[in-house]
Image 1 (tube, rainbow, N blue to C red):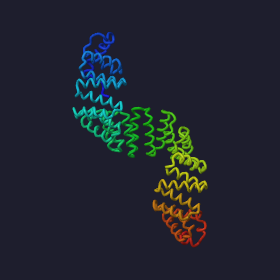
Image 2 (image 1 turned 180 degrees about the vertical axis):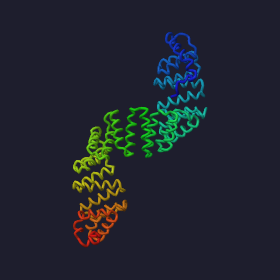
Image 3 (image 1 turned 90 degrees about the vertical axis):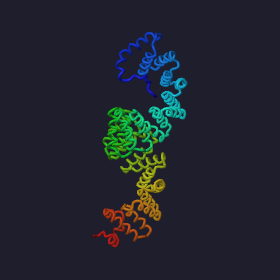
Length: 469
């Protein structure tokens, strides 16, 4: 909404400020006394700036009584009515103003703002375009046209309007911010950061601009700059919980887990228990290797939001890392029941079921995992191992081949594949697979004795694999 501007500028303010209080006092003492139109404008402006809208409206109505055919007074009445949440009455006032002066661009713009607030988007756009047909360089018309288009998710058109506004009014206090926001939503990250920077040149204390800039920088992988941007937002407003939260995310992305934990704890101190914050804390502690703290925070998450599949998965990973497979398996089951379309949930369940000796469950879970994501060699190897346990060596060999296609330099795949080849009686190929594994990772020779005891005890096999040197 345009400001309620009665054309007072800063240089004049010092001259009339002292007398203004006397003028308002005189009006309040006897509102029926005579005041000329200039006096009434000053009094109405005072009430508006003080947020006393009802009193400002009374004064403007008196001004209209004196000069009923002044379009400017009707426009001001519309602004006040809109501020009083009486938009339909405001539109009537704007119509009165436009009946008197159909080419009043300020009234057209304010009418558009009110129509937008009522959700009458096309009428609002029509009002802005009418103003621009009269004055194509009208900065407020271009700006509010962009705002309405942005709210209606017509982002490309909004950007066009905002860019024209920056040409006409590059010092407009909000246009660069809105442009940055639109670029952000359109995925034009570099342009978004540049626009936010221009806004901050004008308003360096805009915490929201620093915050939004940080979000875009984080998405670009510019984590250190993102943290700096969040720090600026927090320097302006030190209880900005969302800035602490997203700063924590950027710090975690940097690998600065201690700082991330501190940021997340600040969010909890400001806003109280929050599932997403507990979850991120759990991730940070898990990455630090503090499984007790990680487990506690995953459980805190689930206490607040029991249907949080990622938290069930994380809790399962903690139990799995401690070889508590039955507890882990239960958590992974919850995760896949809540969201059966996430491959890693199925893979976690499959790996854990395999370790627990539940091969039927493992096999079924691996099948789901590779159906959802055929690009993970780990899943294919796990699937192959489960197939071997179920005495399906041909299918296991196919799964190993898929893993090798995805990661041809992974020694463990060739090392494990040898089992399937042996089961199929393809001893020569098994030896070749083991040789490849040893070439890729000589450390696999140390595992050979335990993994393949019968082969290790065969003198010919040890000779072929060059193990006795």
